[in-house]
Image (tube, rainbow, N blue to C red):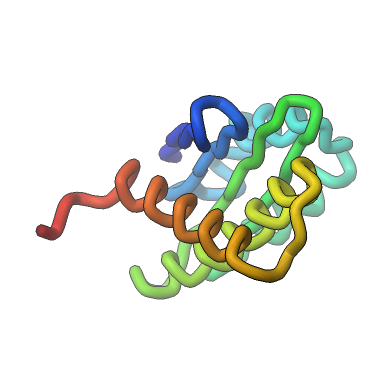
Length: 129
């Protein structure tokens, strides 16, 4: 299991990116992370079941700690992994917009999603330039 922390705009929000895990073998660590975000045991069990399938992902957010977590399970290809990250990133973007009272349309969400994507790439991808 790989975990990376991404800081959004000098601690205005944090994102925990969790990937390369097995929902059953890493159940204890995944459960601890989910519970720290306030998920009930029932919701954690449901989430672990979802994440046990290939090409699955999930995002959770906690306004109290101004933080989100993106979980991406095993995928069938690299491009599918990025697809899952992009999908879950949208949920994180929506949570941040909600917290700060911004609209979901216009330039603000587009810039936010681009910023988050850039931070994810800078955090986990090897430079290709």
